[in-house]
Image 1 (spheres, rainbow, N blue to C red):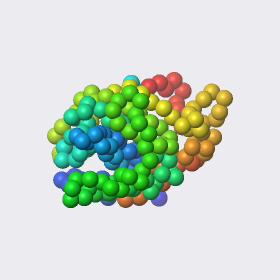
Image 2: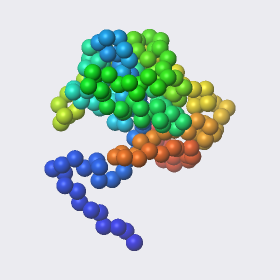
Image 3: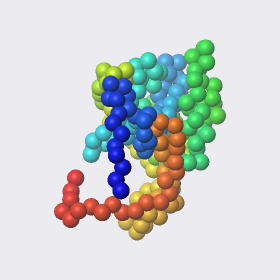
Image 4: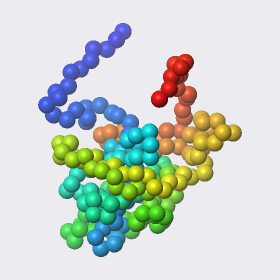
Length: 198
């Protein structure tokens, strides 16, 4: 028996009416005084087959202003064990515009761009700002070119290791918009049609 679809009102945002799986990343930027800002993002990921990474932000956020001013940002994909640290990066700023909670998030310096990455994250990306697409409602899409990348050894795909073992050994932390998270530690091969190509 098939279910009857429920029509949604598209005159308002629809995204909180159902769950969607998103990556959960921490974007790092450098504040005007040289301190590191970290912020979680879920509307984020590759934006081309090439080494381009993008995330959605608002021009009222420090992440946006810092990326525009410095011309760079970093991306850390936290592990499921780093859920608390990820939550700490979402803490609001204090009246003096600081985020004291970031002191509890261990970082390592970026290697190519100015900035820092979350220590122990599954994937590290360092990006130079390439372009910004503004006026997506209140949001903007910030796109960078990946100039340095590294991945935890257990999360690296290699020829002599089955992909399902990679996921089992290095589970993926995902955000279920609007208010949940999950850990992906099991996967199956997708049944691509014969002759498929990207």
